[in-house]
Amino acid sequence: MLSTRRQRRGQRGFIMVIALVALVIMTLAALGLMRTVSTSATIAGNLAFEQAAATSADRAVEAAIAWLENSTGKASVSGLGTCSTGTTVLACDQKAAGYAAVRTDPASGQTWTTVWNTLVAAGYTAVTLSPAQDSAGNTPAYLIQRMCSTAGDASSTNGCSASPLALDTSSSRKAGSLAPPTNAQVYYRITVRVAGPRNTISFIQAMVAL
Image (cartoon, rainbow, N blue to C red; front, top):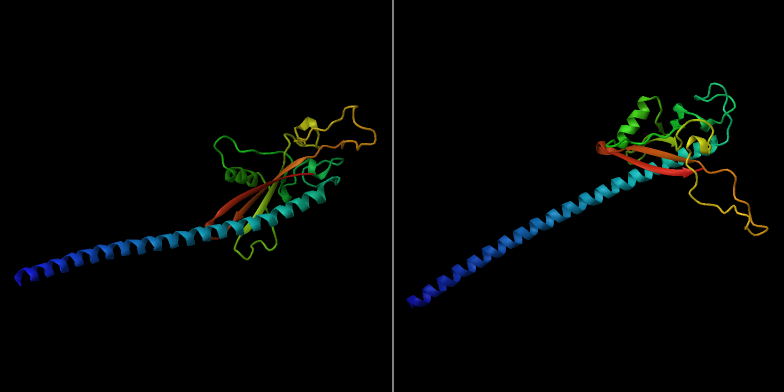
């Protein structure tokens, strides 16, 4: 009888140990699950912020392209920007419109934040939309840079970037084929800075050719 009682006590003690180990494992699993859910929620929130910022930036890019299209080929008048009479609007700086006729690239180790601040400090107005802030709390603003090394009407002499597409202008073209365009496209870099909620800052760029 005494031996049987000892066996039963030993079994109870062993079951208690197993129960405690199982409880510890379940607790760790629950903590891991909670951490996974929290991380997933954070990632989903960040993706939502990113998508909202991208959508806001798209609006700014479209506004900048509309300004470029309206200004392309338009003759300058006295007192408009830094242009002289006889040139086109896009041949020179239009600081009030956030337009630079000459490109500014980041130096070694510089960020686009530095370039942006440099242009704003030089008098280029970062153009905001109306309303300035969207429903997600993002405020986009844009600056435009023509991809040229000097001001003046776009040509090969002032370093304006031309289309990389090589056109066949040889005499072997078939009769009746369309002649290649005589005017090379000029490239413009649109930089959008999006100030979002929680003090977030995003930069999105688009390159357009007109």
